Image (cartoon, rainbow, N blue to C red):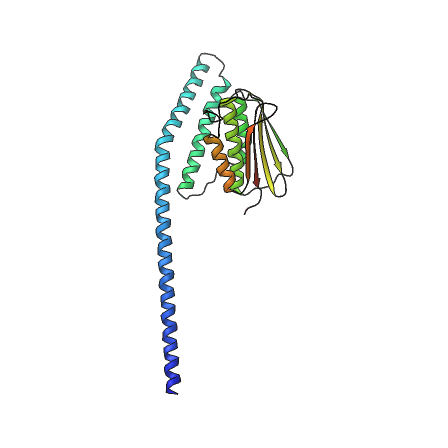
Length: 244
């Protein structure tokens, strides 16, 4: 009986010791996680401050200059060029997106983030700047995961920007094809092919295309971009339409 009592007490003490060790390990893990989160938060805030300081002023200057030019044109009784209005609207949109990005970096709710819901405004600005764009949607439209929705919008935005820079006023078509498992985004333009990349550098993948590939790859999709056989350029991305 004495031996059994000693064994019982020893076992109980051993279990209490193991529980204490486990609790200490869990506490240490939580502490490491908290330190990592705090450092990540500090880095996001630093990036947010850098973006704010470097971009906000320039965007504000662009908006003010465009507004002054519009005011002077109306004061002289002249018609305001559509391109000038497009510049002002693009500046306002850039400021909105910058605020949304800074909010994300500060871990606040991104209530007005960009997505395909903003596609109509994006196309309208491109048309106002002189770029003829048509949009076609096939399949059954449905809500997409936020990261897919934003990636699709950014791909169209970057593609239209590249057309404006490197293909002038070439006719451009945007096609969104919904399928049960994926969303295909295809942007074709009829510009003349050249040895200059779509990012303004020599032939080869530019920063814009690399950014597209990174977005698509992060979501588990695929992207193809290059000259078309019939002339012009094509960007085609297939994105998973369901959250992973």
